[in-house]
Structure formats: C-alpha cells, structure tokens
Length: 183
Image 1: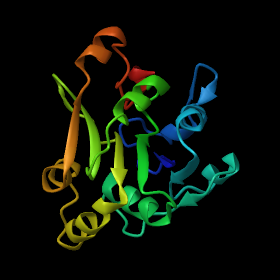
Image 2: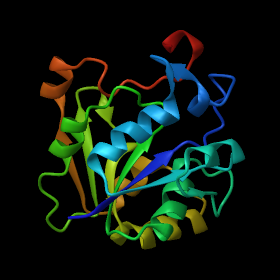
Image 3: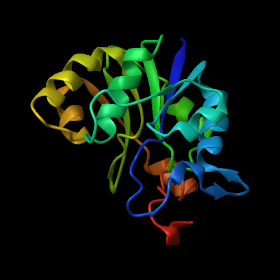
Image 4: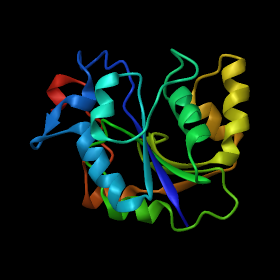
C-alpha cells in the first residue's frame, strides 16, 4: 500500500528560539534527518511549512490553509495535497524514530482513520498515520476553533498501538527536541 510522509516543519519553535527544522544533529539538519527516515518508509514526501528555506530540499512544501492553529492545520493542508489515502505524519523534532518502528505502526490498518503510538507517558499524535478519511473531522474542528489533536483522536476511529516495548529497547525513540538543552 502506498503512503505519503508529511513532515511537520512549520512550527513556531518558541521554546527552541530558532527554526528547529534547520538545526543540525549528528551533522545534518532535523529536516534532512526526517527526509532520510521518510524516504525509507514512504513513497512520497510533503513538507508542511510556511518557511521558504524548506524548499531547498526538493520536496513539495505546503503552507497552512489556516494559520495559527497548530499541527492540525498543517496535517489538514498536507492531507488535501496527498495522493495517497494513508499518510505518515512526523514532527521534524522527532529525531530518533526508527524505520522499523514506522513499519510496526502500519502493520494493521483495517478501517481506522488514524494509527497512533501510545505508551505509559501518553499518546504521540505527531508520530502517527492518518487516513484521508479523517479530513472531514479536522475541517469541522477547525471551523469551531478546536485545534487539539487529542480531541481529534477521540472523535475518529483511532487505533492506539502500545509502544512500551519499543521504548524499553530505544528510550529516545519518541523523544522530541524542543529546547536548546535537548540537543
């Protein structure tokens, strides 16, 4: 089954103080790191961003249709541009996700609208798969000003995949780089 990767690189990076996508970790930018991962697990890549500097990577860059509504706006805008039903969404600051983990999440799609990792500390809606079937609910939520990803997951047919065993083997797997000290 074909999938598209949606790399969320358009955040405001308030806590980091600079564009996270262009920060270097292990010698390459976080955006390049995400692209390398997504090239291994998806057929196409879309970058969600309003930053013209992100065009240099050679992939389609999609600006938010609705500004200042957080990740749900970027996901919605990119899902509309995607050519595939299933889309792997990853936040650019999730620098330690392994290709095997992405494949593990996508083992059983059935009739779900989303497939999201869950673990003892919570849910990871920004390292997850979303089907285009979730678009209508996202649009409805944006119209009423509800931008919370957890509300979206509660209102669509979401499969939560227990990821505690993966985290025991790879403690940084779902770690986000949000502040300078995280680098």
